[in-house]
Length: 304
View 1 (cartoon, helix red, strand yellow):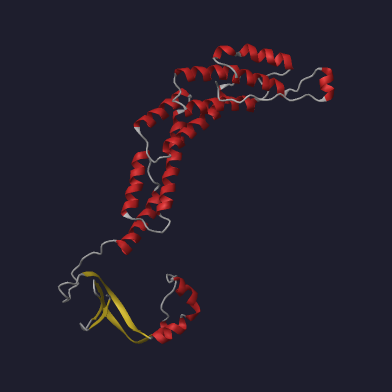
View 2 (cartoon, one colour; view 1 turned 45 degrees about the vertical axis):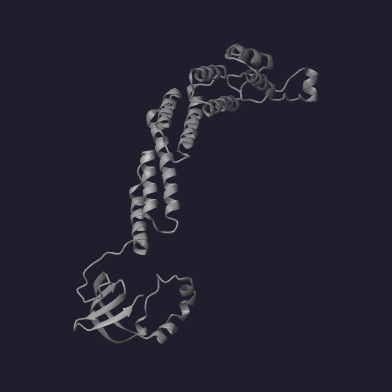
């Protein structure tokens, strides 16, 4: 009936067999098998614990503490896998804990682990329904957990789950609008907020995505451009002519970086520049890069 396999008794050593002495372990085996074979709570109890202990010369109220907690934890997991600790299950668990002489301090880590396991199951599908929230609230009270501890357990595990989603979204260094909405949906579902420092990373990643994939701003660049051309950006700037042959020589030492496209740490060497400096405006349109000096002289580079 119960989710326990029967244990096998240990064979005594030859000298113990001659003296009629059984291994201490067999005391636990007998108690375990009695409970495992029981059809109801009326089939075992405290009297059996005292009897078996007396027959084997073992204090089962003190010995095999880990095994006693493990048996209780196994049945608690079984109950949670098949329901929500209804009245019958609660009564069975209470009787089992009393029979196994498990104190509240013995049960505390078992109950906390079971609650954490349930929280993990609730969060596994990235959706927390009203029924699941009520289940967690019920378990918190049924298992006698400290409310602050239960809340902290849920919040910690929910935030960890949320941060895993954030990590996956940021693996390419960018955050698309769809990824942002997914994260916001998880925040609302789980009822937790992303830490401030992580929010800053999300904002930066969203800006990176917008630069590469987003819609460019439209501005009046103050120049006569084609009717099918749109102004996007302008800034004050200084420029000089570039000697490409000299630049290739100067950057030859960094050929591996260039091949991999790792150019963020590189800059144009001053020795590759020639001619006098020009000062004016740098303008970007949908079709051209325009350099406009203070004398209104314009140099145009096609972008398409």
